Length: 207
Image (cartoon, rainbow, N blue to C red; front, side, top):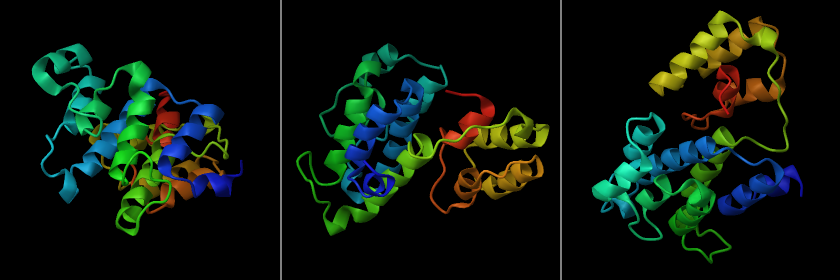
């Protein structure tokens, strides 16, 4: 397996290989599920679905348990459903995300992604890279880089879900002595950043 081959894969296969190369925590997977659910809820073919991505936030923030949300009727709504992905049990979460991504890109058995779904596939890949990280590029944060400015910027983005200051974070990290090209490239990329971003999590010490 090479990095270039992995990056060109169907998003569900990307996740499968991440599971083998660098397994993600349940928290990271659930944040990915929430981010992709929020994106799907903007798509015309999901307009009839219940808007439930925010329920993942409620669970992650500790205001409700999975059991309580399911009791309220937000549990299993079908293999394709956003709710089924966001509120999957911990041991089914990885598979539920891959299944929902597959359905959203044309079906479980589609190896080739049709042109009508390519933009959506690009978003899925970008979110996987943002939250789960490229397993072929190992990055370690030097504690010396974690100045009060760096940590404050990261915490503000995490709590507000506003990542427009990522380039400022890149400058703050550089001022602190960070010369890691992978970190700078991630801060400056135009791809979407979401809560669960691997760099923000590393700065804040979140697994």
